[in-house]
Image (cartoon, rainbow, N blue to C red; front, side, top):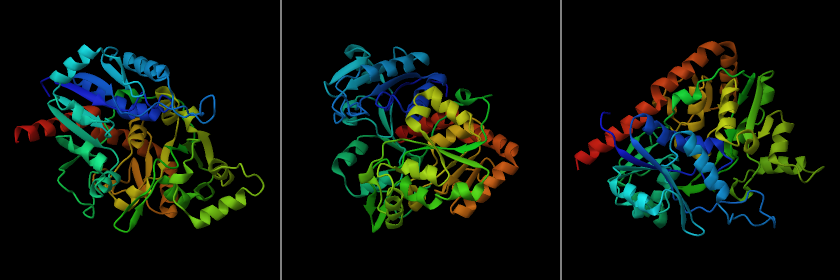
Length: 417
């Protein structure tokens, strides 16, 4: 693309200063756009209060009333990548802005060509209508479309404020109503040079995950749940693939109210806790053969997260149950980073084989038996799959290609209005 645009990117980097993977998800948008020559700014205006992971001094005060930690983290990160004077963060508790001055922020808003609202992180996009074009990035396909179909007023209003709509669901199922949204396919942009590595490799299959991210959704007689549902189907995988080592970097926070009831698993956990009621899901996974590390510690910043991926042999991961049921063609941002680091990916089938290569570099699975076969295949032909992994990242996830295509499609559609 020859002409430079002024572009605002939104995200949740400051909101999660201990989640390196989240930072990378958002950071690679402004970083990739800047490297394409665009004039890029990062705004964080999610309306979400920073929180105390430990409950604060009282143990039950989860809202942080001081955002200095969050602001300092964002400032350091932006400065590191040459964006030191190009960010703004709003602290919702006091409606106070940090970073760009009010005058400069207003000037940027009035002159920006595009605003890219990544994962719908902007609290009130209507307040940003002075920007030429607002782009909505749906990183949670199936769940997004269900919420729209169910008519969640606040959510519908936020989505409707945009002009162009892109989704990680590259082949959204016919069973979900399209409504009036022209969903265009996109995927996570990866700044490939950030993932080159000569780091020593452990002989371990890894992934980074949350047990649950939010409550399941009911739609048309089906329940669309989280990773906890799918992971339970593969609990015995370590015993099936020994001596291969299976590891999960798992957050310690378990939102029990969000978990899907499973009578057999609940009974198993009750029995497991008979001798010690304080035993957790993490303890149970270790009991059945998984290596379990604390994601908040192992991946607590962008460097630790990247090092964890680069030092892994390959990724093995399940997907949210909603993606498995809906088959939207979703592919993980995290898995794309594994590919960029030259690490093969064994991923649960979400329909992505319709739009991405499968069989070399990426291997899909549906059943425990297929997962075992994929792990064994990676072990036997590792060099071939590692080379294919990086080649897939170059062809399908390179930020230059992904972001240029998105902008070109948006500008083309604007011109046709």
